[in-house]
Length: 161
Length: 193
Image (cartoon, rainbow over all chains, first blue to last red; front, side, top):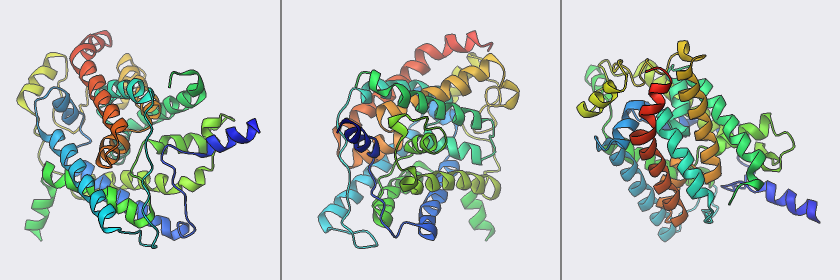
């Protein structure tokens, strides 16, 4: 019974996305395309720049606040429209947004990520765009981020949460 | 066509970039009921390559393949934008930021990332250790501990009105402010700037 519980817990991701059958093979390309557009925006708006992140944390430019603020506002309006109009997925399923439970990790982990964000000038998204832009040394940062994720996974049950 | 290229190669303003990023939220929901999030991809890489029997990485990562394709797309998008749509001019950086960064040893302000830090020559130096290895580790460890990053918490979480995401975002900023204003200067001196 204990083993079974553990198995079930491990199966649940932070953002549980129950993959449906049509998300196989060629259907998965739609996510690649959305990613490509997203990556282009990251580079063209210079969000991947270490300097933009420095400007943000030094409160010397409105740019990043404008980007994040208007992104949140657009997301907020979109989600409200989806909910109120009962918009479904292209496959006709009701849209499901998982609830995020409060944990201490959001404070401690959030703080730790913030330290790294200011150093690297990149959150995980821009990391990928930086590598694609030819800053190949960022691949080392990426490997280190994988290591950080792995160490968290290894010790997650011993950390306060 | 020339005019179009001239327009598209300019750096895009925040009020174009922000809404486009925001639209990723409904786009992913509508095409496949997916919650916008990027740092999970790091976890899926661990689950796929180095699970080592750790319960946190023992799940069917293949079900999350969409997320890996999404981040691969971001990488390709970065390549396309830099190769075909690159801004011919140098990046414009706030004067005061430039002055403050000069004072702590940054000399190169021509690219999106300063070559003083982000170059292969720095890999096996204290600079590389700090900015690539330590920096990357903090990003990977912190985002997973927090259960998300700027996309999953700040954008997806707040726009779906989830207060734990607001808490996480506030602490992202607290960490960033502390690093920028207090810790970074002594650390940079320590690594030889």
